[in-house]
Image 1 (cartoon, chains in turn yellow, red):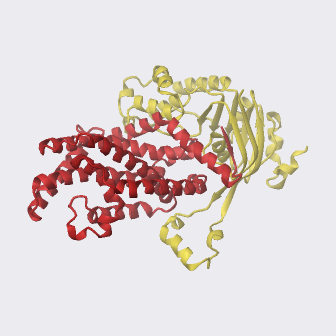
Image 2: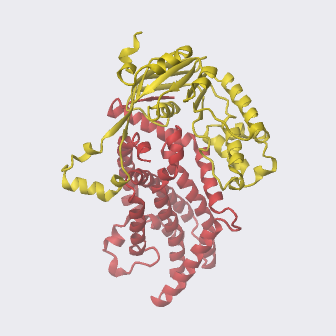
Image 3: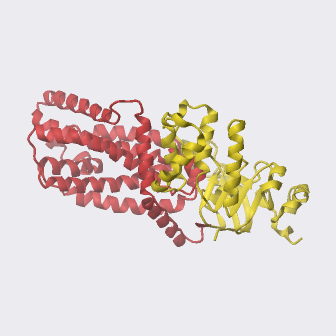
Length: 258
Length: 271
């Protein structure tokens, strides 16, 4: 049974300017011996602070919050890309991550090669990919173009293929960063239908979005992020109250007991 | 999937172990990525990776013939030595320099997915191994042309190659971490490799006067090449393989795992 359980998750990004990534700079700092405060001066950014949440089958969670509030970071933690600095993330079930549709795509490779590559990166076995290739090819509607290198595609065609491949993974858990809209008006309708059926299959959805109308239509729960802090999870019909809360301390976990 | 904060130094080792075992479990992914790297690098080219073979061949002929005249050495002695040296040096040096770029090149995937980091080193090693396989024709051609039949030496050479790959694994992982953090590293690596190439007896046979020089007597790069070249040319495995290369592999992997243990969580933030 699918579940996502996040307990007291904190994540800090070290702030490394392009400059401090050079070895000379580093050696200088060591040689001078902390005149500028050494390591501390680089500092770190708390991207997530003590975030906790529990999701089970049937949960469709919308993440809201300003830019830089930690929504994408939280999604990437769930996808396993970031290891927590504190706390724990436990995800049970197969994950389909639609965070970056172009991940693993090689523009010089043909459409068919990219289907294979993208599928492997998403964790499918070569056999599973073989079984899906035809369906992906058909859905993308690219026909003979699939045998051509992807850099010959228009950006709309590239997006079609990326979308068709990324959404072919049947998964219990779906992670999305903003709703995906690709292609011309015909394809857009098909894509919406496909995404909707993917949503219905998935046991758990977590989506970050700024569009509260969209969240109302696909989610049943909502959580607000603010400066790396998370609010408690509330039913979707309380989204307006949640958004109306003043930014800052009221979102802290201590304010949970409503 | 379960990820947690650093609980203790010891528990971190089990995560490191999991990264390594998952890397091998995902060998097909590493292999496909490596194949794709080669396909896209040589797309549209008729000869593809055989170009590396041709480039090496021109170098072998150029250096082999020219140096044998300049240094008054017999072609049939110098050329096989140079040919084998250049083929395996190419594998060694490119594996090291591309290993250093492994995380930077895989940044998009590392930032989005749970693919374990050492997989990107494995990808680079597989890619270079496939390129090396194309160069085996040079080795075979030279051995046949000069009537050198190594016999069981082939098995020793394969053992030497396996040991080299084990060593390249830790070197790649170590340098990939360093290069992700310090962006001068790839250039430093390239410069050092160039220096090592000219200073090591790879395309010149060490004269007796240099026998005690560290370039000959304590040069792990030279020993790595010799652990494959000597068995093929003379059917014997040099002593230094056991006295230098195996200890280097053990110490190198230990040090790399200790450093990886400290760094694995940070790498994604460096990229």
